[in-house]
Image (cartoon, rainbow, N blue to C red):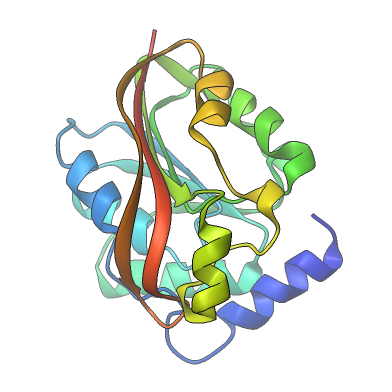
Length: 207
């Protein structure tokens, strides 16, 4: 993730309004509500919509992103909702998380470059306690076809940054799979997630 990548996200998040809206991702919301509050990690959290929602439920939220503009928006949203979140700037290598620090990790459209995405997933596993939960929703490899029909739906345009069920099974091999499915859905999350999409949803409990 080079400077151009950081500049891209700072540019998007510096625009007026919230790029993906202020409401939490629907899947994340409905899944998180099933679990008692604890310590939650949200990588690539952007403007904080999921972090703020989780904090309102009583979760102790740690988030990180490469975009300082994203953090600014997230803290603004947190203040509007009278909650506190720990939001850090940098790459995963810059963070100082501890082994088994978190009770849950939310990977919501956390698309990392192909060369590092699998190693990132394995690092996240290290930070999750046994019995902890992964809540995942992101674009599938089939989503390339959906972007070709409608760029407003968003998502990476390189297939290597997209996900397959097989990749997730390999990256989270030591998990009890509660749900793992590729599905088509209509996204209405701000102006950059707008339209029909192909996504993968995964709920896993660490053994």
